[in-house]
Image (cartoon, rainbow, N blue to C red; front, side, top):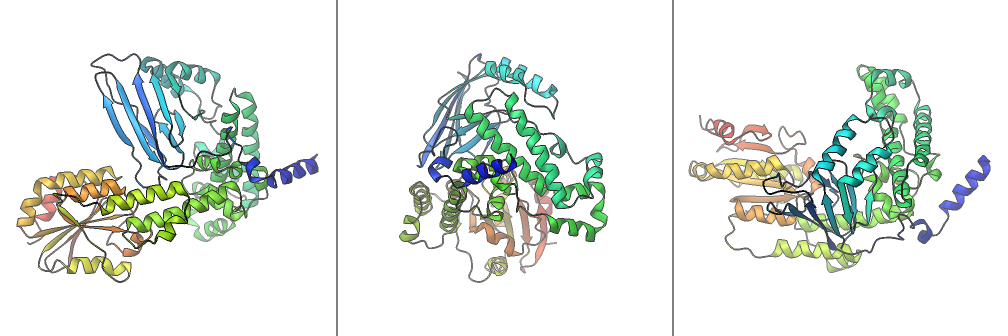
Length: 485
C-alpha cells in the first residue's frame, strides 16, 4: 500500500502544469491589472447607528506597495465601498474573521446584518481554541453575511491543536530534546491528524482544497518554530545548545511530494498565513522552482525588483519593463507616470540620494545643511504613527524653520508612490526615497528597525538626539527647545 501511495505521489508531481493548476475550479485567474471592489451595506441600518465599516486587513504584497485600499462611506444609508488596485488576487480579511479572495476586476456585493453578526461573534468567542470550526458557526455566519459576486469566500480556518496555541512549558518539556528529524515527524503526524478533520466539515470543493493548503502552511510554520520549544524550556541560557538545535532546522523535507500548495499559483494565498515566507523557502529547499507556484513567485520577484527601482528613481529601460508579464507592466507604468507628474503648489522637494555607499548617505545629507539644525524623519506611507507625526508637526514647522531648523524626510520603497507624492506636496522639506533592501545598510543611529524614527542634528552637524516613536508635538518640542542650550 505504501509503495502504491508513493507511486501516486510521483504521478501527481509529473502531471502537466495545466492539470496541476486546476485548483479552486480555475486553471488560473485572468492575468490583468484592474480594481477589485467591495460594495457593502448594513441591511438593518438606521440613521444614527454606527456607520463605520468593519475593520479589515489585506494582502500587503501589492506590487504598488502600501496596504490600504481607497474607501468611501455613506453614513446616511449605512453603505461603504472598498476599492483595491491590484494586478493579482488578494485576500481581504475582515477583523471578525471573514475572508474574501478578490481577483482583479471583481465586484462583490456584501450585505451585513449587524445583529446576527454580533451573535456570531459572541458564539465564536466561546468556542474552544483547539476545536474544529463547527457547523453552528457556519450557520450563524450565513445569517450574518450575504455576498454576491465573490470569486471565493475563504472558509473559517480549522483551528489547529498543539503548539499553535502557544509554546507552553508542558509541550516544550515533552519535545525540547527532539532532534529536528524527530520534531518534523511530530509536526507531520499532527498535520495528518488535522487533515482527517477535513472530512468532517461541510466544505465546497474549493474550500476543501484551499483549507488543505492552509493546513500545509501551518505545518511549515511549525517546522520553523522548532527553536521556540527550546527557548520555552529554558535553553536560551545555553546558547551553544540552542545554536546546535537551530543548525539542524531545514525545509528540505521527505514529505514534500505529499503536499499540494505549490502545484498551483493559487497556493500563494495559503502562503500568506506565514510571516517568514516559509512557503517560498520550502519551494527553494525542495527544488520546486519549476512548479506552478515556483514559476509565479519568480515572475513576481522580477516585477518587484523593477518596481523598486522605479520607486527609487533609478533608470529603467523599456526592454526591462517589456520583459515582464503584461499585468505587472501596467502598474509599473502607472507608478512611473505618477512620479513624473508635474504638481503645482508643492511644498516639499524630492531629492536624489547622494553618491556613494548607503552608510555615506545620511552624513552627506546632513552636511548639506551646514549651520542649520536638522530634523530627520524616517517614515512610511503605511505607518499610522508616522503620518500622524508629520501632520501634527505642521503646526510648529514655520516657527521651527524661523529658529534655524531644516526638515528631511526619508522613506523606503515599501511606501505607496501615489501617497508619497501627496506627502511631498503637503510637507515642506527635502524628501528622499531609499531602496528597501538598502535602508538597513544606512547605519542609522539608534535605529531598532521600527518607525517613526527621528534624528535631531545641531548646527555643527552633530547628533543631538535620536527618538523612537511618536508621542506628541508637546513632547517633541521639549526636545527641540534644548538643542541650542
